[in-house]
Amino acid sequence: MESNGRDDPKGPVLHIVVVGFHHKKGCQVEFSYPPLMPDEGHDSNLLPEEWKYLPFLALPDGAHNFTEDTVYFHLPPLGEDMKCVYGVSCYRQIEAKALKVRQADVTRETVQKSVCVLSRVPLFGLLQAKLQLITHAYFEEKDFSQISILKELYDHMNGSLRGSTLEGSQVYLGLSPRDLILHFQHKVLILFKLILLEKKVLFYVSPVNRLVGALMTVLSLFPGMMEHGLVDSSHYRPKGSVSEDPSLVESVSGAEEFVSVSATDIASTPPELQESGQPAAEPLSSGDSTEGDTHLLKPPSRTSPDSSESDWETLDPSVLEENPEKKEAAEGKDAELPDAFDPEPGTPITVQPLPANGQGGVVQGLVSGLEEDQYGLPLPIFTKGYLCMPYMALQQHHLLSDVTVRGFVAGATNILFRQQRHLSDAIVEVEEALVHIQDLELRKTLNLTTADLRFADYLVKHVTENRDDVFLDGTGWEGGDEWIRAQFTLYLHSLLSSALQQDNERLLADYGAPFVAAWKITHNYRVWYSNKHPAMAAITPGHPFQGQYSVADVKLRLSHSVQNSERGKKIGNAMMTTSRSVVQTGKAVGQSVGGALTSAKSAMSSWFSTLAQPAAVAAPEYVEAATEVKP
Image 1 (cartoon, rainbow, N blue to C red):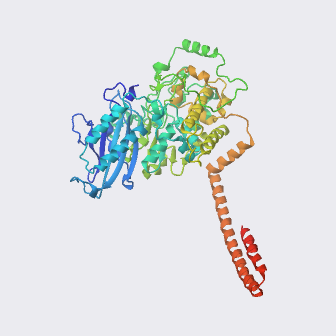
Image 2: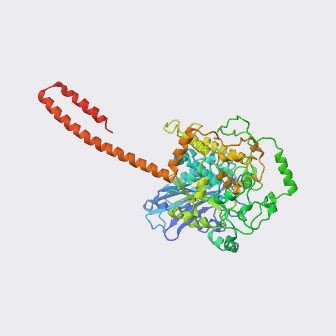
Image 3: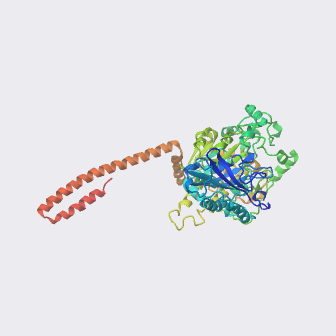
């Protein structure tokens, strides 16, 4: 595979970089091995123009508030033959007085530095584990001029990672879907659907290690995404080169000639177009198409900043366009296929994962450009201007409104990102496990169906089953990390299989008709549908949790509504306040009643003591019994 560096004699690790904070210059590169600029030395501060944000990504905003932190980030490729560059940074700060050798530029009481690894492979957890040890040793030297340990780290990582494949559990090291579901509960499925719709999703929390951990764990639920789906996720240009491009200025001036696509536009789409399974490409632009070529994907003449369609998003016409005779013949051939996708009556729908054997390897996708398995996965979500930025520096803020960026899944710790809600479709508050969606239509589109709620409830119950047992927590198959990923793989396989059916309205209704209609006009669905995937014939169509309604579904829906709707939250808060008031009132009443009984007890005890009657022993029993009846 091109992106894992196995055939490159230099190995998968590109550079080891040290970034420090200068009291006058701010964040800057202090050391790089090999040098980031070929003609410069190891201690050069110069950077390639494409990597101008590297210092701000490696040394995150607000890092002075923490003793140590870890950052995952993506850098754009330096050339056309390269893919996304994956970065892992370990940040630490120590007191300046603890240094054995204090350099002249150290003028503050603390020293802040980050040690980074820039790699061709997305082995974030594995790189982090190795880098944390070296960073600790580097700081323990208390002399930052000792760079030999960093050069040894470069040689060691390339030696140990050379030839390693991206298949297996090492890709998911440090990413726990189990913890994600324990925290977000059923909202994990909402996040999954948000990314399928290629919306602008912003994660927010501090410190950065919690941020990138939550974001990358969500992405790990998509089959094949971590291994092969992120290679084109960082194709953006720095701010200066974007503003100097005259073609982009022209595209902005003509933006009013295009029609944006939103969930509200789906209602006006003909039903036969929505449910036919064909990519709905033509409604994305207005006026220039002819009636006879509506089944072909034609690129628009210019880029629209408000539309999900643009020159770089449209599929290659040479791949998709066919002669009418050949297309009709192909459609007729499809109609003659046996009912391989129709489930047999009485076939049980289970949520057991598919066997790993027999799936075959990965091949280069003709349209997506990604390495795909026989099911066409990973879906080409992070391609053609849809960015993945696990951590986003404040200096990259312009990318949120860049006309060349059609969407993003990004993480931020600066509150300025959260305050500008109009630049994102959804803001995910990781700390509170909240998903804020401003657009009412998008909320309706993402409403979980009864089958979705069953699926989410099934995951939550299995994850929480053994959480209180310190010996069994996370050790079994069911409810474990791999099991959770298998369930989401089955969910996506079933969704794709259902979309291929001829009369699939009933099958797709379990996923939500508005959601399916919006998903069918996304780039990732159109690219996936443009290719044939014979292995899908073995996938049973229909939602894994389809079935008749029951009383349990009513309870599940009610619980979901109370937890998520604004009215339900108000009712829940009112109930909590009322119950708290009742408890407090009960305690006050109990105290007053208990005080009266105590006084009576003292009086009776003194009276009985004067009479010297043994019956005085019965008084405490009565008082204790009365005290226990407190409300």
